[in-house]
Length: 375
Image 1 (cartoon, helix red, strand yellow):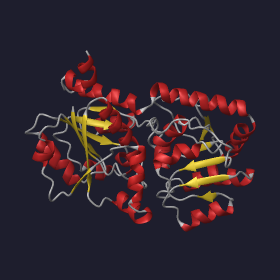
Image 2 (image 1 turned 180 degrees about the vertical axis):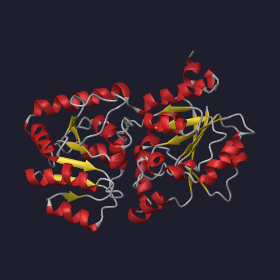
Image 3 (image 1 turned 90 degrees about the horizontal axis):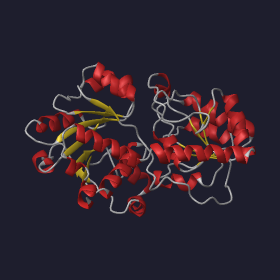
Image 4 (image 1 turned 45 degrees about the horizontal axis):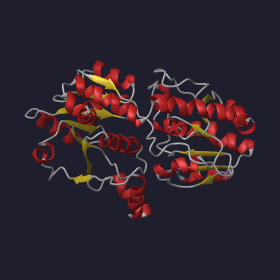
């Protein structure tokens, strides 16, 4: 297939978790013989923050992990959809795109033969419903939603007539168990502070347990306000700032345990959506402990793939178990890794996407070019 993707950025993961999944999916599609082009807005905020904070050399470093990764920059004023989409078989437009772009691509679809899908990977369908309702999906063939609750919402609201659940997953070309050396500490956490959506939870399930147990810990991420950095310092936690996503696996190998603290909207209104961080952690073979979230879609086996701490006190107990019982830690990590490898890699998600393409009527020879060539 000739696939065109409109996303915020594939080059920058600065406060932009969608880049993680996008990179893995693009690489998997290309390895299967598909032609893939990514389009991202010129001067997008994530890429600009990355360059301003860390320099363009980080884009060169990205090439070491994703050889040949590339993008096409566009502005709405100069974007020529006839030129960009003239040979497309499948077009995906991400929900972070401007309303105008979403509408224009939909209108272009009317006079074209490609299949067009809207890809939603955020909680705004619940938390900012009015804004999401303004996306004009009239001429779209359907929606890919990163959780069943979001998929159902699109159908219930009448925003689309067809929708599929398409969870995020681990890019196992980068996220896999790295050789462990002498540990640099006990606990590592990779995550952004965000919009005060989990401040209390981060204190209860991460900062306070580390402080009370006297653990050696390091935290990576961006948008940590002064009060957050002070809380880390008071707890004796090293703050590492932004960490390129492709380096997270190397950091996981240096520590004994990590945790997952989902943002409040996912816990309260979006059961079944863990976001991408736990997929990536388990793919690296590090023991994972999570604060509560409802695995409504049975993606994992809580208690076997990862431990669940319902309170800060339980988090402390679980941390002590993992840190002082190596056999239990190894068993947990092994189960989590196995589940990822069997069900939740970008290859699995591309299989699902190709199945959607068949349902939409794209020719099997285009959907499976590598298999067709070797048949």
